[in-house]
Amino acid sequence: MSITSASRRAGAAALPILRRIGGAFRRPFSSEPDPASSPGYHVAGGPSFMRGAVFWEPGRPLTLEDFRMPRPKAGELLIKTKACGVCHSDLHVLKGELPFSSPCVVGHEITGEVVDHGTHTPAEIINRFPVGSHVVGAFIMPCGNCFYCVKGQEDLCESFFAYNRAKGTLYDGQTRLFLRSNGKPVYMYSMGGLAEYCVVPANALAVLPNSLPYTESAILGCAVFTAYGALRHAAEMRAGDSVAVIGVGGVGSSCLQIAKAFGASEVIAVDVLDEKLQNARTLGATHTVNAAKEDAVEKIKEITDGRGVDVAVEALGKALTFSQCAKSVRDGGKAVMIGLAATNVMGEVDITRLVRRQVKIIGSYGARARQDLPQIVKLAESGAFNLKNTISRKCKFEEANSAYEDLDRGKIVGRAVVEIMS
Image 1 (cartoon, one colour):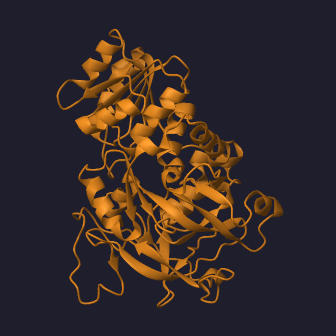
Image 2 (tube, rainbow, N blue to C red):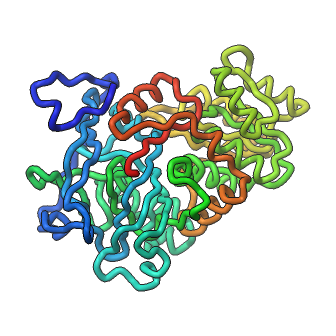
Image 3 (cartoon, rainbow, N blue to C red):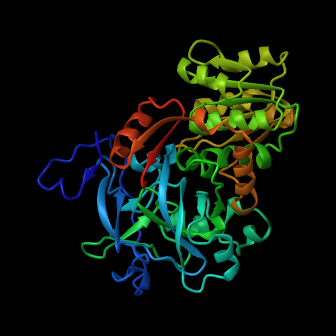
């Protein structure tokens, strides 16, 4: 099913793409006037409006709506969006499993071209990202000034969670998205990347070399970014470590490649779909385990001489796989949880083993944009990370609904990417 256009949906019955599992979460916008909502702004020599895919409520399809051209403020860049990845985090929002303000534009792993800088943006940012630059954006957009950002822990940025994830705005408490028809505000999930243009804080961007394609590189800002953070920071993985990845979709398959790039001795891929496991072999897995056909924990221990792996990564966000991950690590090993779950899903762990055998259970949401995203780009540029094999589907802007439908049904082997602007 194609995405519904606002001009074509009048009088037509809405066709829900996803089953309803809860209501939308709403918070009021600030009532202060915002110059970013002014209808007069436009890109030099370009349009004064754009299209974006709007999520209204669970069970209702995304619709393409016309927006006023989003206006960046100081320290922010206006990006002409070239591609946006299709991620399970978006799907959780679309299904009502994770509360988020609505209406909103989802999409949080993007590539694009710099077309403008906000007024009063520092010269060093303009010099680093001049108009025409190719860039990739990280979904965690650090403010750079809070307690955690100053300590170098940008993945815990207070402003990102307090404003963007809690309210759907940037860090002045305002969105940059306003409908063209009536000027009403629309919230932003990260930068709101499923749109022809998006506003991104400079701290969340890295230059994309001309040698890397826009479409495939979109996943660097979430799927690969998340995998890198899990193995570099949470697991503190070392060359020679054995690694198991439970759930090898878009993020999990990126973990396989990062583990291989970091020098893992054994890379064990666990899933319930043979097609995904076959693909995992091409991405660096030395062993595969179909958890629907055999006991995943026992098989991992068999492969590792009865001990378990040094590092296990859970990339699904399910209670069962949480438990499998914790049980799969050796004594003193690290179980890293990166899969988001629906609200109130709980995981169980053997407390006595955790205490006696020094098992470490660590949560990891992503990486650190300013220090890690440039390194991730270098990995891709060097060929250590195979972008081409990770992308299993490319689709048009109007086909975003279908991509999320198929993601929900487990039909996307790796990662799907929406191609937005030529």
